[in-house]
Length: 283
Ligand SMILES: [Zn+2]
Image (tube, rainbow, N blue to C red; front, top):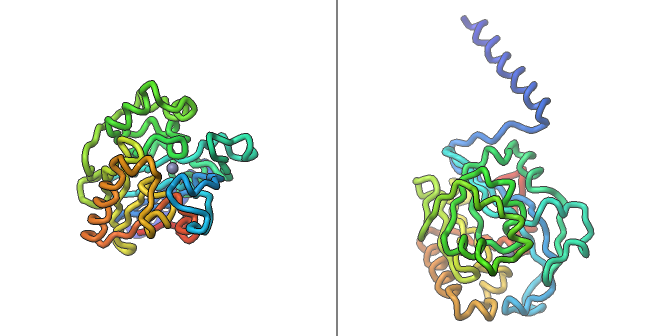
């Protein structure tokens, strides 16, 4: 009996090795509690801190990191943001210029996911912080996931004023299985992964709260903030002062006091350079 079990275990091990050799991928992460990955989705070459209500003297680095985030939960996976488009990898920055900013892309999101054993087909839910070009670059690759969408943002995305370039990058979401969400949405029903409604930067902007066993609670800001100095000095883009951004920031401040969560500002290079990046993770 024991021999049979040993053989069975060996058989599984051999099968596992064979499938890894075939795909070249490590096994998909299996978790008993929530895990959060920070994925390299590009760097934005920018030098206009004044657009965000701060100055050169306030910021250690005027450029922006542009990470994507993968939450692995026992009940499924959530991808939050899809970054700069993978097609820009290896292209010079001057070719990748969009509006005010250049884009530097050294690895693909698909490759970042493959490194941790994840394919687009494994991702249960897609959510974007908002629909600006630096957050939707590869959205079409994840159109097979269930899109957790806010109507106000979807209306912008498929309305007449949508950015034409960005629209090409997310156009397939129009056919995605779409679950409309409102307010703060508890993704897996246990309070550990919550999409926080934080409108202002765009009408359907949302931040992401993840409750991690060892790290504690984390709020991924999306573009509720861009620079750390916006938080420490109480600044924001001028156009947002009369929108819902001040109320959304107050709401998140209260949420963080209540939950003890820390704030991660994805675009802030001073945060990003010290973050644990995939294939490492937070749990
Ligand atoms: Zn952004």
